[in-house]
Image (cartoon, rainbow, N blue to C red):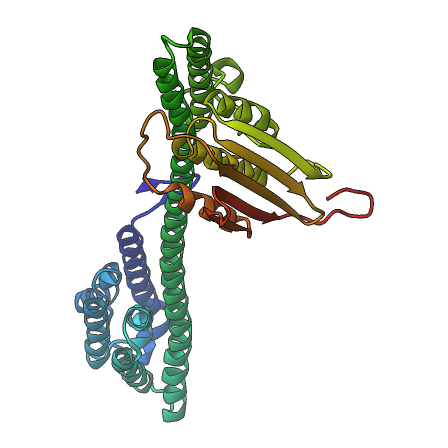
Length: 401
């Protein structure tokens, strides 16, 4: 016996054993009292020790019907046949074989269960004829009794199969949910990796250029060297803040966001001033302008646009060199956001910086995620350009999205 959530689970063997014992006791008591009260004057043999043994043999095997249904049915039905052939009043032991037959039908394929049903019908027919019933009544009794059991057992078998199918579908659904959860985790890790790439690539590139510039002009222009060192400190602090905010989502501690100070808003175009200022500190001449009516953007689009501009400026820092001119133009239309980042001129970079070649791929993937387009490459008149367009929800007549 097991205690589950709010219910008690009993071993089916215990239930079957109790059922077999109860039916055996009832049958023996009924046989003894029935012979004395009803059948003694009809010429039936006394319900003695042999009849009691056969009655026990017909009923007690029900304890095995869940573990070995065919064994239980064979013993029970065989005991009924011997009991009837011995001349005892047959009405006493009819029900146990019928219950065993029900179990066989539920547990076995239809073509095999038909043999058990036929054997039970024959045993019932013989008992009816032995009880001096008419042939018609004996046949009707056998057909009706076994037929009702067959219909009931077939319905139970279908219900059992349906429950098994539902259990299998439930397990399959759980596996699919686990796979979807794992897929979501993988996508989130990929997003975090992409954000880390953008943050690290931009800030470390700026730090390397600024440090190289400070070393280059340390003796000839101390003021410029000092300003480069100040920019190194500012850029490094900004990088740490962004990385803390990004890696904060990976924390599993119990600190609240207010207490821990790790969960920060993702950067957006509102932080473009700071981004341009840090890029200028790297020795680039950056100008930027906004056309159209500037409006709040969805957080995903806002972050996407910021990261692409950040990557474009990082590439300019890496490859255009000191003194390069970079123009940045944001265009807000009613149904789209456009941006042009054009870099040209400049001397060779102060420091040679490695490049993975994944920056442009990341930019294209980000834009494609929001249904936009991106073009990046050399310009015919010289320099390099990054141009992207992201569709936006159209503005209504009142100026809202």
